[in-house]
Amino acid sequence: MPMPILPVAYSADSQNWPSGTTLIALLPLLVLVLGFEIYCLIDLIRAPSVKQLPKVAWALIIVLGSAPIGAIIYLLVGRDRNHSVSDGAANGFTATTPPGPRTVVADARPAPPGLVLRTVGLTRDYGRGSGLFDVDLAVPRGSVYGLVGPNGAGKTTLLSIVTGMRRADRGEVQLGLPRASVAVCPDVPEFDGWLTAAEVVALAAALVAGERHRRDGGALDGGPLDRAPDDGDAVRRALRTAGLHEVADRRVGGFSRGMTQRLGLACALVANPELLILDEPTSALDPAGRAEMLDLVAALRGQRTVIFSSHILADVQRVADHVGILRGGRLIYQGSTRQLIDDHLQPRWLLRVAGDPTAVFEQLSRSDWVTRLEPAAPDTIRLEATSIAAGERGIPVVLASCGARLVSCEPLAADLESAFLALTGSEVMAR
Image (cartoon, rainbow, N blue to C red; front, side, top):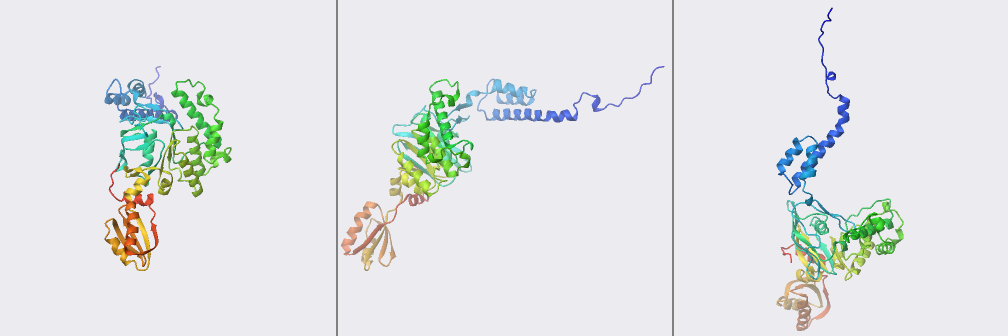
């Protein structure tokens, strides 16, 4: 007797569908594949050029091809690797030359004679008026160059482009020395906390030695650490110069910010660089530490070139013989520190005489070299002159013609801060 045919209820389990547990297990893989395809799409968009096919065709292959086969094909066949050149810079930083308008950061176009560094039309526009705009920096060889400006003026951006850690939208950076002779100390250096100070500086010395060996065409079978020479003396000298020789064996994880700043300087000095770039080197130091750091920088004048940025104008005036002032991303002044004070600050004196100063006041008011005149006290006159020389010659002549008895003639301090305020309050063009 034939068996009756019974209806069969089909369910998901009766088909070849993955179970819920299987879907959960595959979810990380799906996320990974999706992230890989997104990365390839972003790389495609940012690339200035691709090979074999147009960008649109490669985008369709990545999106519509069998995941992730299309993305892999793009990386192997379509990606233009010539626009992803890594340039290992010496002395503790690595520079990458990204796609887009190139910034010359190597020795292809050296700086003119007498200059260790020059930038030409350097521009990095972040939008809404922030960034750098047409900066023409000129740093004389052997000088201490102070780069000053308020927060947000573009100091760190400029130094980052010079060292190759950021790219410029346009412009050039020209160096008058090999890249291996440039050392950089960032404003906030960071180190592995389990290393001692001596180990950190020794590691910096080994990395520099390895980079120089690579540039000289040597093999690095054992890596830079294995091939580095014994730089124990150099490490000790760098630590002593930075004031850390007494804590050479302490782990740096317990260092204060000021000590960490000193350690960054020691790492920069261990390679004996010709150009030393310091970003805000005194910002984390106490007054005594600042004085020691500035003395160190001043002692380097003539031996090597130092560029340091700071918003503390007294520090710049103390050690810098050349200064560049940034405001709103533009270089509004460049020249000697003394020239800045002389050109953009009116020389002033407090003149005190015995008795009634009326005759002296009237005589000064008729002098064409006096630009401003006002009483400061019953027997004291405050005056400004067209130049220091005019005041030094004119004041004795006026006193003699009036028969006045001089009590004191005190020149008011002409400092960088006053000149900076006078300059940034006007529309002085960059030199």
